[in-house]
Image 1 (cartoon, one colour):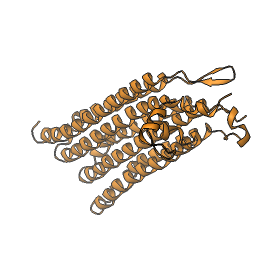
Image 2: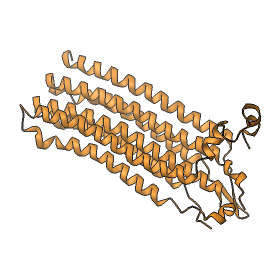
Image 3: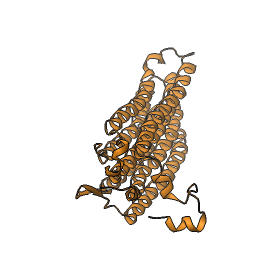
Length: 192
Length: 136
């Protein structure tokens, strides 16, 4: 196996890291998949929350002198929330791909190669969707903030700057498309 | 029957999938930065010159295109990672280390260039739309 010679050269103990094989194979594929699910949900929500506080504070500040903007600019908050919903959808899809681990007496007959492949696929799908939604949520929040401030000055600007927010939230959709394609490649074997 | 020695054979798939996700994530980080920065500039100049706002949406569109580049490459790379095949009751990995590192490098190159492009679009778009607002 890769890295076997390095063990004898660098360190003789079983407790040394000798490279990628230690990281990639010493974490169970069910652990990789679970981390992917956790990251997709949590990072999407962090992005949505970040965007909401950026746009919300601007809306509240601008609404002091221009109270008419309050209801219309809640659309910006809804765009940020959609980012979190993409994360929830992706987490539910990824959870549906997981299977039970094998029983302790069936470990030798379990198809570990397919399981590791599926674990890596779910992990990278989750990280990809989570980080994309983080970036998208922040971008929507910043665009929403400038939308509220411009709307307070001139009411006709709201719809025009909303177009910027629509482009920003499209990034979240790109993430979920790739996440679904990657999770379709993952298929944990049924436990024997 | 799979033995514990087989647990390491699917390792290249991590790099293949990671390349796909990196292409997506990094290109979208660049696109998000460009969209946000140019959007702030549009908000600022729209107050001075409302008629020119629609013309100045172009930097935001350009930044969105960077995100689409990342999407396309991510879809191509994740479809290229082949699953282990079933043979005589056990699964054999067919996706080798060469493909894994190639796909990782491909995703990284698209992603990092997307970060650079999106960052540049954001800064130039912000400065440009503010300049157009003052002097069309």
